[in-house]
Image 1 (cartoon, rainbow, N blue to C red):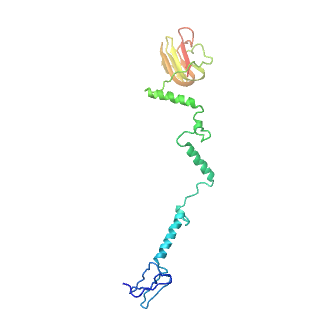
Image 2 (tube, rainbow, N blue to C red):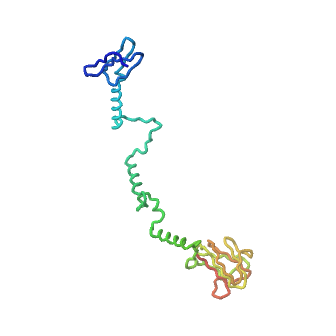
Length: 242
């Protein structure tokens, strides 16, 4: 309940003279800037607690936030470090990413350079991959190691083996395999990387061995002299191949 008359100012706005008994601070909805205190110690402060004024302030604050006119300063632990002092460089990097997204660059040498070192002949790479795909789809467990055409010649080979001692044979270049055909009636011992002896590998009379070995020097041992790569039927045939 409000006591007394409620006077108005010149603008028709009620003055805050309607006081509720007791030590209270009523908040007017809208009032003048006057402050009124009665004899009982009751007081109003429309300047500080005017609801209309508070609403106006909140509206102004909302408008400022909307247009971004109020600066926002983040604490130092929430700031983003500088990525690059050259904004043009960042744009160039982003343009490259956007251009290369979802496809292999058409010019690896100018768009990173990494793919260019794999193979300079794209058609050759495709042919190799097609061959590999055919092997896998065909259910083949391994790629066959086919001997290359031609043989690697011996350099100044002796016509016969030494009697009871090592006979080294040197190829003109490194070979990947050695073919040994013993067309004699005697045992033939052979070895790699060391002198041959009676205790070395053995190929018996009429035997044929294709030995996969990278080497340049091949060693033979026979108890008696035997022909090497002769034109007669009684000889030892030695071939180096890739």
